[in-house]
Image: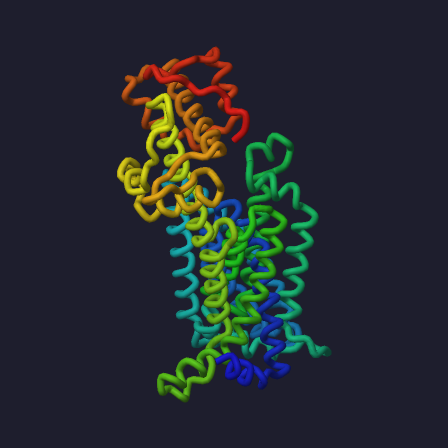
Length: 469
């Protein structure tokens, strides 16, 4: 499989390089404003802008064609005029969409998600209607507007150079977005996490919001010719969402968003050239040799998100499952130690050793296999020793640990009894949950606040602080 993948990629040409570069710069330019949208919890605003920009693009295109047909500009000037109109309209669309959404929300007294849905679906429908009405006159390709034409866009060179036009346009947009992040990093950070604080410090949080919408609209319009209005939302949101799974540091999230976006674009084009042929040839469809790069970019970005969702070191599903297992083992181990210690309390001398089945039967909500894993961990740590017939006894180390646990339990019961009007039979369950998280420092503070009580509300002796744990 890997050999076939490499063999298919051996036909990589300069056109593929141009396509990959165009795709990477498009994705990276989208990733920066997209990261701030995700951090501000305005992800749906990116969706709204990608849809709402459609009528602006169509109107700018129609206006440019009308000016050309009137003879006001030459063929050589039409391209530059179209770009000026597109980007000027993008600023209007970005700010206008944000303002219109807020206006609908206030006027209709609806929540923000509903107002976004009303605005962007209505405006997007208007754009599609304009395309349908004028498509025959000015040859607007609906599929081009919606899904992009990255493969052919990379063939358009900047006059007098060998640089593809999408590389230049999206490269400039990426550089501008990066420069704005560097120049206004502090203001963006404060306004993103605490707009009220930003306003109190003299930072125009509302102005930053509208500025971000304008920059996002500019980026979306620049990305239209490569990935279209439908798929651009994936490039705005997915890399940032993936980065947030991998890191909680803002600078790292911004950097990872850009890197993930670029990797999604390059890998997406590589997969476009290889995976369709590798998959469909085995299904008997030999005529299918490739796919659309724009769509594969979004699929690849989604694949990277799924991989991060499972494999992220802190927030991934596997990491959370491992953490939950460790926490369960710790709690089960504490229950074993506490139970053995209470058995010892009942007699003046050490009681007979207790078997694992007996322990499992006495622990509510703890499965037999988790109890067995916890016992093995206690044995390896030297907290208990195993006697004949699978019986357990506390070691000196285990007794000190169990003593601290029971001390935490009974101090918390005494604290709850003093500060809350609860029956005595309601104290044990709460203390049974909290005891695993009360360290010696908290125990000392509880003891000082309670004036060093000797017994808990049930009349049981509160152990003294162990010498070591």
